[in-house]
Length: 120
Image 1 (cartoon, rainbow, N blue to C red):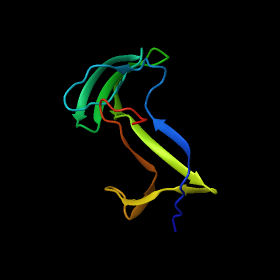
Image 2 (tube, one colour):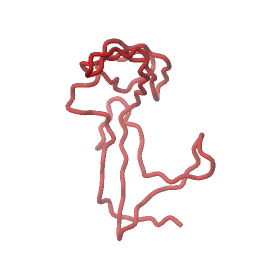
Image 3 (spheres, rainbow, N blue to C red):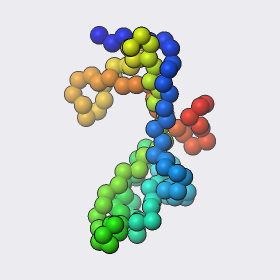
Image 4 (spheres, one colour):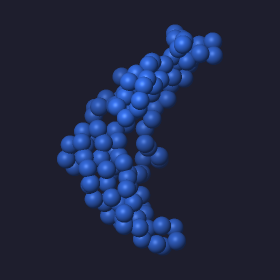
């Protein structure tokens, strides 16, 4: 059985953000999340896009100066996940998800919409 706790002791944000330098700012199509780019990214092509994710084909230059033209990359929006713990037990909820047979357990969380912050 799943035990529910009532005291928030751990809060973390699952932002795909490292140092502020790796995302492009503009938006293309319906996807509103960040896009991964580094100095090794030579070109990108959107393969699939929805509001919730974007699949791109990247052309990259490796550290050994080799070009790879079919590196698939999945961009998705910033997220917030909250892990609640009390007396060595964690608050999770049971859910049914497409692609998984049966129930699964998840922490509380969700997508950060444009204009929102992880705190509000």
